[in-house]
Length: 112
Image (cartoon, rainbow, N blue to C red; front, side):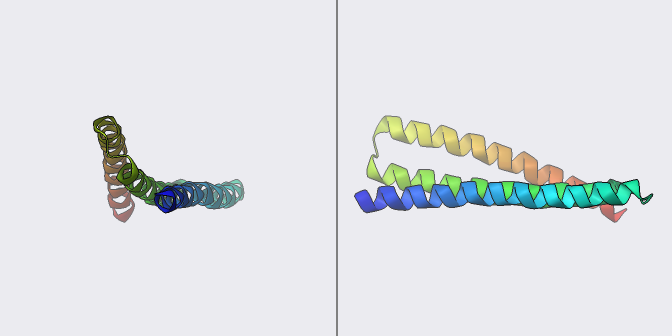
């Protein structure tokens, strides 16, 4: 059982690391876009690309965190733990759905 807890913690840490890495990469990309904007070029399309990259990292991190919650529930499959898991998965799934939908709309706007 201790191995499952460690595995769950590891998967959750990977999810957090993915989100933090995505935030750092997106921040660097955004700084580059803003510096280019000061030199006179248009930055709207590039900002949308930065948003899409960050959205990808958020979605990937959320998926890892859902996986960690599922593995964690294997240790204590009580009714209360299953209810908590269900609510967490529902919240993260809705968040992922709308984030993915917004990213799809932004990519359609960019292709026009």
